[in-house]
Each structure stands twice: as structure tokens, then as C-alpha cells.
Amino acid sequence: MSTDRVVRPGGENLDLLASAILLWLPEGEEPDVQLFSPDVVVPPPHPHPDPWWLLHEAITAAMEVTRSHQKLPWIKVGTRILSPQEISETYRNMGDLKASFGSRPPTVKG
Image 1: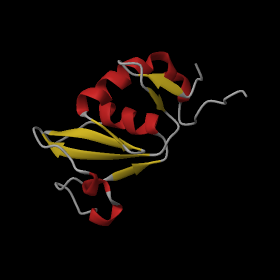
Image 2: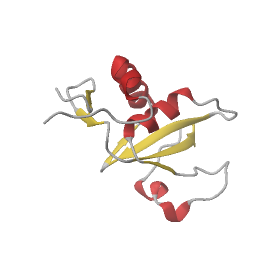
Image 3: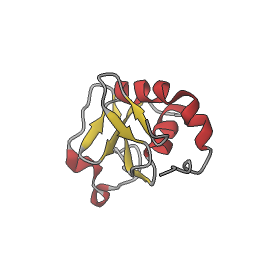
Image 4: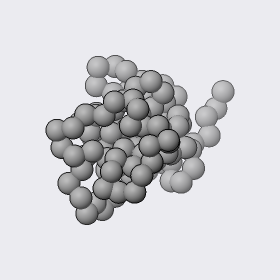
């Protein structure tokens, strides 16, 4: 397996080097694709989409940021929307891979 991918439960590969959009919504609310559009960026406490160059950084931010609100993270990567539970599972599965990234993606040999 390449060092830029993590396997989620169910066997799906996620490209940790893909760009992503992080969104915060109140518990119980589910996003639609329109909420992830940069055209709808408004000040908090609205969903406020936050673009990230790398999925692994968006996941790390979602899990490690100190929050002063009761909202849950959702991440859109490609055509897929990751729920708060999927973000948490992926974060746990990143394990040592996350630590090896630092602020730069790993060099992929090929």
C-alpha cells in the first residue's frame, strides 16, 4: 500500500494527499453538496466551508482543533462526503502515518 493512502473500515482507500473541504454543522444536521461550495462562505456560526490542500490535514484539524462550539465536522473529498464518525475512524486508522506527515506530505517512491 502506498504511504499516501489509508484504508478505511470496509476496505475503501482514501487518498490523504487529495484536496478536501471541512465543514462544521450542528449535531443531527447532515450536509448537502451545496454547503461545501466556496460561494456560501459566511462568518461563523454558519457552516463556513474551510478548504484544505490535503485531506490528512483536514482530518487532523477536525480531530485536534480546540472547539468553542458544539458542531461536528464533515469533510468532502472528491465526490465523497465523510461523516463525523468516518472522520474519527479514518483519523484512528492513520496512526503512525499521521505522525510521519508533519506539515508536508511524504515522498512517494514510484
